[in-house]
Length: 174
Length: 236
Image 1 (tube, rainbow over the protein chains, first blue to last red):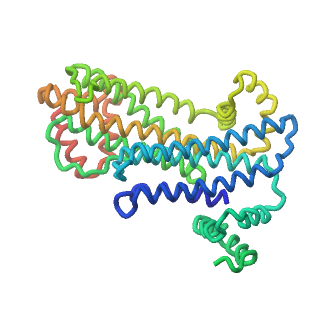
Image 2 (cartoon, helix red, strand yellow):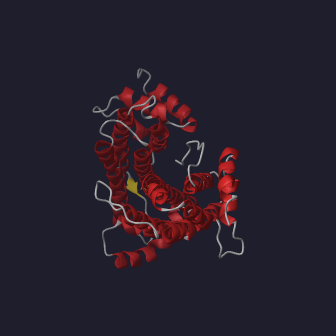
C-alpha cells in the first residue's frame, strides 16, 4: 500500500506538465483527493499496530514521532490543495506556478516516505494479509474502487502479488 | 524546469544573460538529476556535491557581479504594483545566497546528524531537553532504522531542498529578464552593456579569468554558442 501511495504521487508529478495540454488541474486534484482517502486508510491501519520495543527508548516517544509524522503528511497535502485553490483558480498552469505545485507535491511525497519509513521500522505487523483484508472488508469502503486503485498504482514488483491476493480473497470483486 | 525556448538573436549585449541563465538552469536541473541517481547507485553523493559546488560558485559570482556592475549603476524604477525593481533584485540575490549557504551545509552534513535535526523538528518539546533524550536514544533509533533507510531519507530531503532552490532561482532569472534587463537596455550605452557582460563572463581577479565564459560556451548548443561568440569577440 505504501508502495502504491508513493508511486501515485510520483505519477502525479509526472502529469503536472500536461495540465492545459491533455490534462486539467481538476484531474490532478482528483488524484490527490483519492490519494488522501487511501492515505487515511493506510494511517488508520498502521495506528492499530504494536510499537516495536527499542531498548532505551520510551514507547510514547516513538508513538509521538509517528503521530507527528502522520500529521505532517496531512498538513503538506492540505497546503497543496490550498495552493491549487488559491493560485490555479482558472486551471491555467504557467511554468512558475507549476514549479510551486510540484514543490508542494514533492514535499508531500517526502513527508509520506518519512512516515512510511517510521511505520515500517517502529510498527510491528505480524499479519500483513489480514491488514489488507481489514481495509478491503471495511463496509464504508468501495472494495472495487480501492482494489483497482491499488492495482493501478502498484509497481510491477507488487502488482502480481496483489492480483493473486485479490483473485483468491475477493474472487467476485470485478 | 529550465529555460528551453530557442534564442534566435541577441538585440543587445546584455541579452547574453538569456544564454547564461539557460546554462545555469540546465546545470541546476542536472544536479537534481544526480540526486535522484544516488539512490539507484548510478552516482554518489560526492558527485552531487561536486556539481552543487560548481553551481554555487557560478551563482555567487554572478549575483555579486550583477550587484556591482549591473544593478549598482542603474536608477531605480517603481512598478505599477508598488514593487521597486532594483530593490527586489538585490533582495532576491540575498535570498539565493542564504538558501545556497543552507543547502551547502545540508549536503555536507552527515545523514545521521540530519535525521536527528529532522526528528527535533517533529517535536514541540524544548529542543535542548529533547536533544539530550535523543543523544541517549540516538544509537538505538539509528540502529533500528538502519543505515540504508537513513541514507535514503537524507537523499530525498536533499532532493526537496535542491528542487526548492531551483524554483527560487527560476523565479529570480525570470524576474530579472522581465524587469531588470529592460532597465539596463534603457539606461546603459552599448559600451557600458558590453563591459557589464564582460564582467559577468570574465573574472579579472582569477588565475583562470575565462572560467565562466568557458563553462557557458561548453554548455550551449551550437546556435546559442555562435550568438555568445559574436558578443564576446567584442570584449576589450
